[in-house]
Image (cartoon, rainbow, N blue to C red; front, top):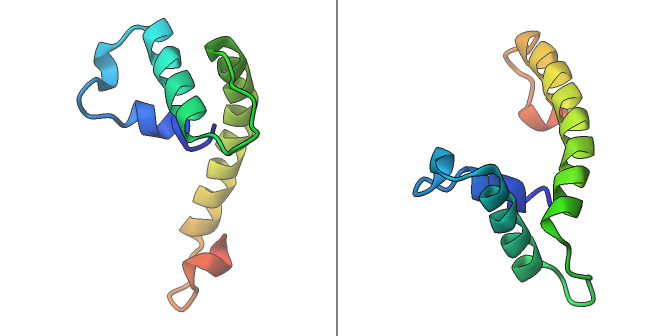
Length: 82
């Protein structure tokens, strides 16, 4: 899911030109095509709901990461910051 959402949202061909339902259909297609063996196919509504939960946590991480990055010392590695 965390790979499918950015993959579809960064598609330079269709980016903002698609409707909401079409976007989630594309996410569903990408997710189901790239799913590991044994993984059950998901529907667009399920993925949209799951993304709402993930998005909240990602936003918190980005906020903290931005603060820590601003305090970045010159000899600190990015992996140490993470």
